[in-house]
Image 1 (cartoon, rainbow, N blue to C red):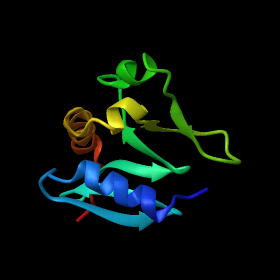
Image 2: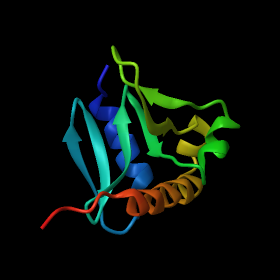
Image 3: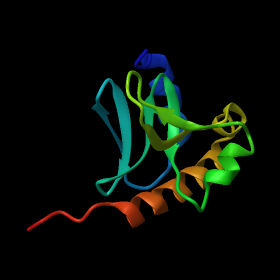
Image 4: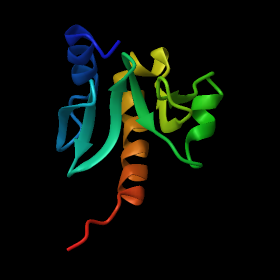
Length: 112
């Protein structure tokens, strides 16, 4: 399942207010970006945020795991956002901004 339009609308509303935020359809899902940096996406029908060693534990403490690509033996560094965080716009913004910082830190430099 990719995602439903109503779920994307809900996620858009919850992320509304993050400066420079835009969404782009990609690979059957949606990527969320600021200044060309992806930090969140809807994959497998759920909102997922980018993780690294700085925030992974907060997701795991709530039972969340990395996104496993269907049919592949690969887990992406995007963890499902817990429902209670998704429903709390202020808290979601805190988590999303952490993931944006990770995205900025890990963005690959383009060759000139």
